[in-house]
Image (cartoon, rainbow, N blue to C red; front, side, top):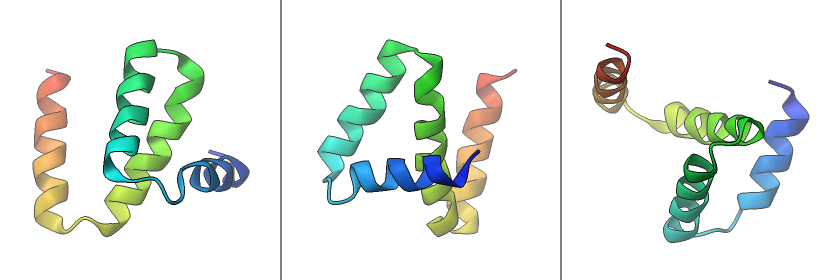
Length: 68
């Protein structure tokens, strides 16, 4: 993913509260448009970088069930 995309997405959501971020994620998922996927990837990357090992394990276990 291009670093400029990360910067642009970060700039667009900086200062938003939890409900606003929830709305962004839900809207992106509901639309199902491919061009929104990089934004969700940036959200995941930001979360992953601050999550502890237990949170990461829980996430990946739940994620794995969606691909089985």
